[in-house]
Length: 233
Image 1 (tube, rainbow, N blue to C red):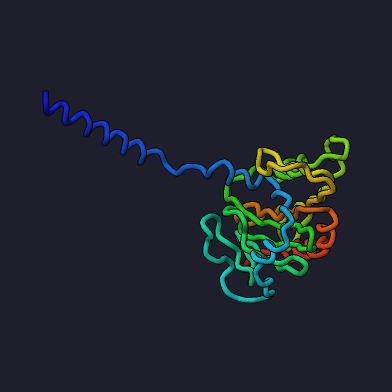
Image 2: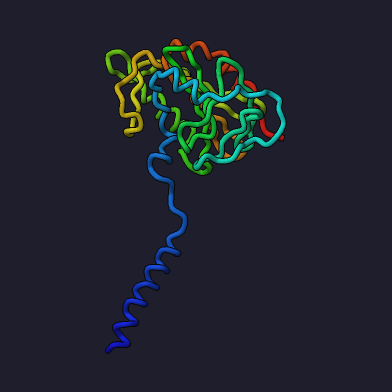
């Protein structure tokens, strides 16, 4: 009897250990996996915080590795020679690099207009995030007209850049983050410029979001970034 009582806890412990080992890799937390589906929140416009986080702008044409050490999540793009998942690009003012504010972002650029700012985020989830069309639909669905109706005039185009298929979207209206990502009040007069690159290692997402006037000051720079995209090597 005593031997059986000793063996029972040992059997249970071995069973639990086997179950844990057999479970396999777990998916990322819901808030991390949702990053591809969600436009970044319109930032709280605190110029002092933006200046404290800002890093030196990218040095175009610089050599060296394309990704810096991870900051606890996704690998961080090297601002001196930005490249990610088999593509590379260049950046010009007023887009200025700063350390990503979320662990699943690979790069983050800010457009600082003093009282307001817009943020360009770059991210890549291998094998995750849905199709290009699904992401474009999710992004545009986060915008409403002044009377609360869905925005129907988003400008979506697909073209070839550097031998890669790139889908761009330009949408303006009242922005309200879905799936609880933002949690703030709807932001009127917002604008999103987005690009999804069908890269050699899967889609790479570029999203510039903020007040429409602020985003407008970086429209040419965003277009130049998209035009500069090409495969690595």
